[in-house]
Image (cartoon, rainbow, N blue to C red; front, side):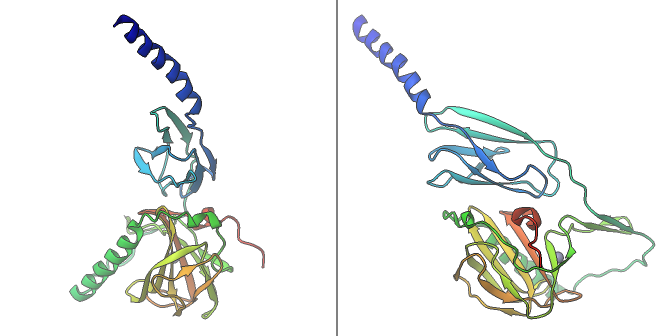
Length: 276
Ligand SMILES: [Zn+2]
């Protein structure tokens, strides 16, 4: 009996260092730790990953996405756990970032409340958008990399905000690119079209493309939509044309990128706009 027990103990002792050798909790990352950033990571396939306590999908090849919201500050934590339970914690300091905040005071008080029918319509459209952003597509379509959907003058940046009579409005959650009506709009990366809407109250003709693992891009105010729900697109495919449908003061593309419900800065996701 004693010998038997010793034999088991010996096995356990030998097994531990062997499994330790195979546990690979390393993490390699592409991207910067600044608010609004998308970070693409790779770890060993089979590992489980959390980011600030929330589970992150890891593909069969170990690819994963991390996002930092507009107001992320302090540090952010990624924990990688191997199949045999070995964990490594990675802490990253988030760079500080300032946004363009415009205070406008002394405006005549104006109560702009949409009528009940319009409110109902806005709520229904918001539900459709939220549902599209909940997808957690297994495919790593985002590995195609990203490019600008339209090039031109940036007329609105991510994160900017107006404070009217002391009341902060919602921050601008995308990038606006001014361009003539009819200018082609290209998918920022490989993906699947998950929402097409011909007439949203705020955003007019609108398209959402799913790039996998919760990453979506949205293109709105279009004059024309060239894809249907379910269409598979490749990076650079034309999906629509610039317009000013919905609530827009001039022709431009409002382009947003989200990781689930977290708005990211498209300009950080795609990098500097090419010349010309
Ligand atoms: Zn915009």
